[in-house]
Image 1 (spheres, rainbow, N blue to C red):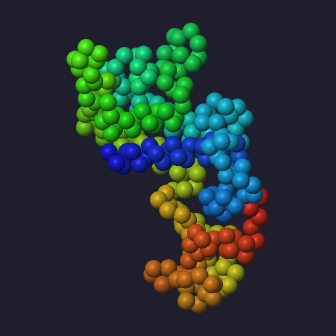
Image 2 (image 1 turned 180 degrees about the vertical axis):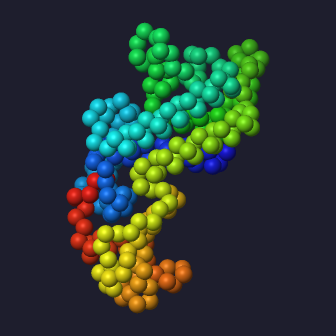
Image 3 (image 1 turned 45 degrees about the vertical axis):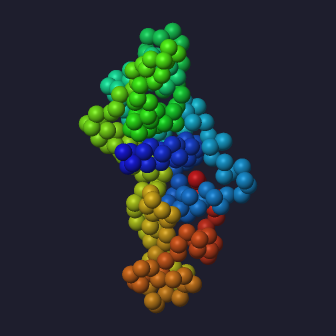
Length: 254
């Protein structure tokens, strides 16, 4: 359950970044996406959620087709998962704002035809999280003192596993598209202090870091890593390394 919730929250938290990436040409791997974004000038540049509408339909001229394909794929996975869960455990009236409405291509207008998908990916992720966390699964009191059936039944184990599998796949696709998955990438320039190879290490559960293969022989003003075989620029030291390597942040897409 916790793995599923974590994956869904990652998808929600990174969704605006993915939509923003659709509007940018494919970015290089260096500087790291997180740092390249935060080092851009102006506070307005940091308000990603305010700049990017959270629906793919508002991006008619994408510059990054890979990010667009990822966004559509993630939407499809999450929306179809919500359809599956609703068909199995939803017992509430369609007029209940908690209800998930499946798409109805025969509806007279496009918004009704989209059902709950019209509310976007954030709403879908929150709705699925509610089912995974067993929210609204107990009888509710009525005006006459009686108790009505719960709006939703508890997810059976096989659907709980399906929710985890789907959310993890969608999360992995998003992180990979943003360059935030687990990877090691050789930088195009050598270490300015020892000419050793520089490798960018990224992971979805922590900030990126750069390692210099020079190790003890390298005179870079950063500590050795845990193995004491490489110099390591952690998150706080990366701006200095970027400056020394002569990278122009403004020329790198976010």
